[in-house]
Image (cartoon, rainbow, N blue to C red; front, side, top):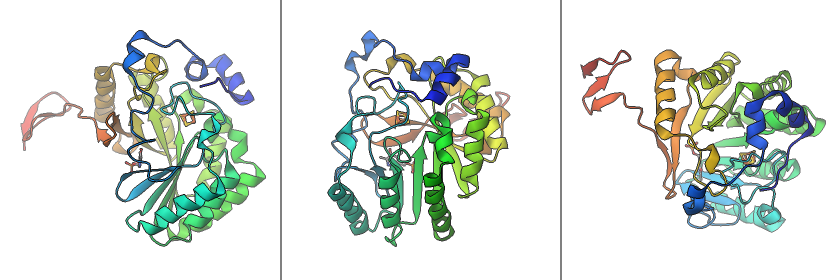
Length: 310
Ligand SMILES: *Cc1c(COP(=O)(O)O)cnc(C)c1O
Ligand code: SF4
């Protein structure tokens, strides 16, 4: 993956170490030699047509491209991001739409990538056509644009797309999920972009990745999730960083991640807590992490460490 940042990020990286680390190239660790490039099986096992990952019966991931405004150096799609290999031709897009239309069991489509809001015309075309498929009840848009290029969210082209999204959100549910990892990313510009999105859709949420040197403490995540929650933004998932070749230096000790999440459960509202999941390396999906609140199937360990039978 090449280095790529926006002007906006260059400025932010000067004042914020957690932001700087995420976009700076680093060395590959020895123990990464056994990591593979596609641990989630996205390109092989689960891709019925180019552009789609169909792993769960009722929902599908639609990879609009591998283009992003900035390159996060811990990305699960480390090898692909920035390359043209994920660009979809008009025929590819039609094939994806036909697959979704044919498979009536798919009710939930996740527009992803890359960043679907970076290739806006293509995403808009896909979005318009998904609205014509009655079996699609939920559309999610996963993006990092409010964090890496917030001004783009307020652009006339985006505004015109968001007006369509607002209309669509009346008959079905549209979710916008923003990837954010640290409260330093919530600058006045980024928060303005979030508020702007909230004018158009009811559900704006976030996704986060545990990252060494970025958000590897209780305080960092507490700060992030409280800030989001207090702005009406719902943290959805926090992931363990996938063991993809090239990102090893970002992976945290699993025990530490569990300890931080358990402490957040003890101290903060459930609505301010994302679900902690591991995307299983054999491609079987996002598995919730056990936070050790149970001694056995009938005995829980309460927040003071006391055993209680249910
Ligand atoms: C994450 C993901 C989804 C969505 O999972 P949810 O738990 O519904 O958010 C769907 N398909 C693929 C391939 C995914 O990786
Ligand atoms: S925005 Fe998302 S897809 Fe793009 S490089 Fe960052 S983590 Fe990867």
